[in-house]
Image (cartoon, rainbow, N blue to C red):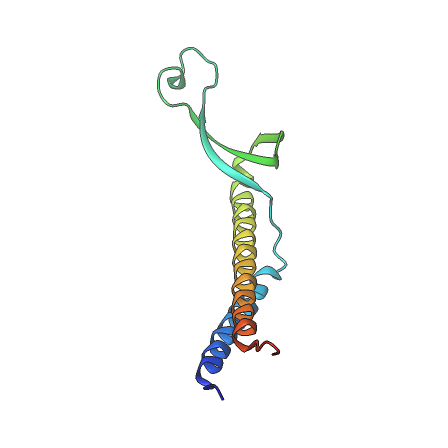
Length: 125
């Protein structure tokens, strides 16, 4: 008969993973709206020949990039909307990060359980 210690260690690791999974689900299920986009600060020129932007870095503007693949759309964000847009882009980034971590937890659990299956397997002779 094999020792129970490896099983208890495995059980402990799986419980920690399940606890982290529950924490991630709480993050994912928060009903905050998000924008599937990226927000960047760019410097643009206004086109006036005597403006400082013709010689030095241009005027700062926040640009929201949405879409994926060949269909990319960029639009300038109004100053009044910048905070809201920034929060929603951050919400999306947090959501994506939590999803990746949740997928990693699933893979780790799967690996642990496959290892257990191989360890407990006794071929018929």
